[in-house]
Image (cartoon, rainbow, N blue to C red; front, top):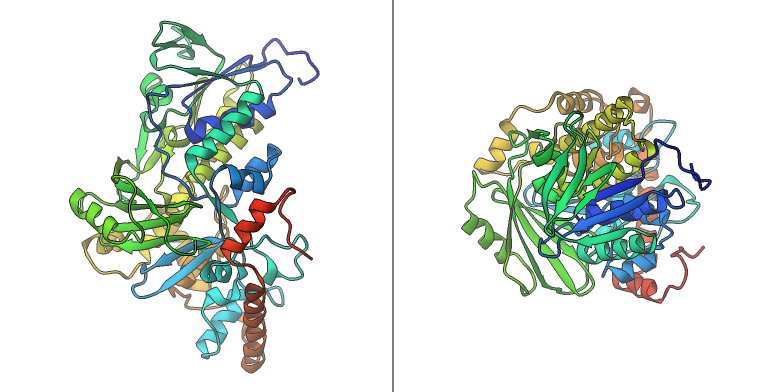
Length: 511
């Protein structure tokens, strides 16, 4: 009820445990959602406990998230040292090659048939360029250019999207500022105890280091890997996916920026994992994700530092993780977000996106004090399915790699989840895509990975059989040339960032 009255069973007190990106995004979004309802939101974090703060790359959903809060791109980019991200460039996953997973389409569909079937036919006849060259997003990323999409694109060739690289600590601070202006109360304290109701097992309150108790109706666990509420207090188990995702650790290091900032995240395959490079305005974020069963800490650290382009500005920080998810993300009166709900390596920059979708689901299924089991069950089903779909997409990158070495061989030889096997089988048989519920990555993303590895189907759509090859070759060349002309007419990434700094209104592409 947003008319000033509050129903007797309405949630009156929301307590968020943990700050960082997850906690302050939740505080900002719920502060806006519950404005005027009388619900009080309290966030408890300890300035003595650091946050992970590694994730600096996002996918385009982040821009929708802060737009709902009334924030523009230029405002957020200036506040968070942000640069533009047009996609992810994969280097040496197929040795000696690179390809881009863009935020956008490939080519122009013809006659109601997906573009890639025409590309496959032309390629078999020797008349097709690499798949990247038919994607505006991919070529902008490759060339280090950046722009915002046209509001009314004239064709599918003009369709692309973009995201941000940013300083995660500055983004959390920006969310905090918004949340506190919305009336969210922050308490700087450590939590020493969690009190549960003797009969229901619901969380009643948390005890601070001072002895003060903070009571609540709904608790949100943003306490990181520890899972203070969901795991320690409520005893919700964890599904370990390390038999599918072999990497279990990382080193992260910041460095001085070198040269022009690329307009994409770069992920390069290494001996027992992969290395990331993320450009910010005044520095770069770097890290290596690796499997401790196949590489020692010393070797992983050395491999990272040997490939950091600029001078490191700190000692590399060691991180440990277990890929997987909580058995349920919502238990009793506690919803877990971020690392408390599970972890998938940041190969496709999904950590922050999973926080966003968790918050959005909570808003759609927001409870009252009765905590209807139907809403909780639906929330948990959606969260589980979405994480499993992202998991499958990440496994795909390892499974298709042709790199040599014990780690990469183990990735190819493992048994796959049935959901991923079904996708691979259908692609191989017909060049078609299975769409499951709650998929974060659409067919164009799967096509980017399949095409990048040249993992091509045995058969294509029979509707292209009658297409004249010379005519098809001309059509594809026109598409490729149109993309190339558009890229050449767009600003470099540095020029784009200068327009961001000068912007006083939302970013728009000139007509």
